[in-house]
Length: 217
Image (tube, rainbow, N blue to C red; front, side):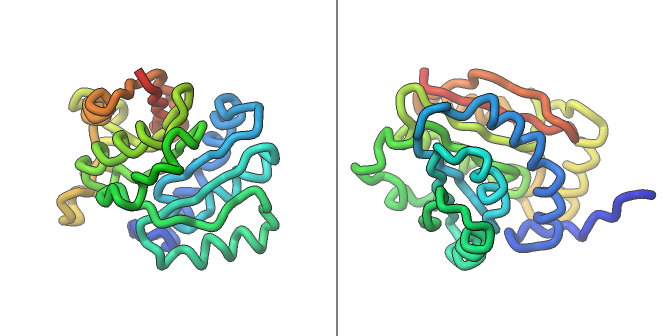
């Protein structure tokens, strides 16, 4: 029986986003179990959306303190609701972080304060221009030995790794929103280099996605 996919809708609280998040959370958890620090550290999620990922991951890492962030403050109540319902006492209240607004993240007390930053499924519906802000922000917030993990489907040097990713890109592009579509890893690497970061590791994931790990040069 073919799985029914909800209508494409990038809103953080939509049925589509919930469906997509449910598909990728366990493979991502496996990567995090391998990569996250074994000692107590602070972990930041960019573009937390509904909060479903950070609330799913946090119980597996009781020694870590997680910080959700979002540019859309309308989802803060949902994030806090999930934290309460699931009793996740190692997740802080969400903070406002907009990658196009440096004043939301360039704060002296936050410099070099996170061991890991992760961001899930954002670039297929966000303009590639936010990659510059993401890398600049990560360079400011990450510890010297920290890393940024970006998960999602991407092109590689203008090509698609699978036919299904090409179809997904065409489906996104057909909606008529200019920024929708699979972005190129090469553009992320360029933005990273501009801000003192480099791609350290590219991990193939299920459903033709990647986990891209960037660290300081």
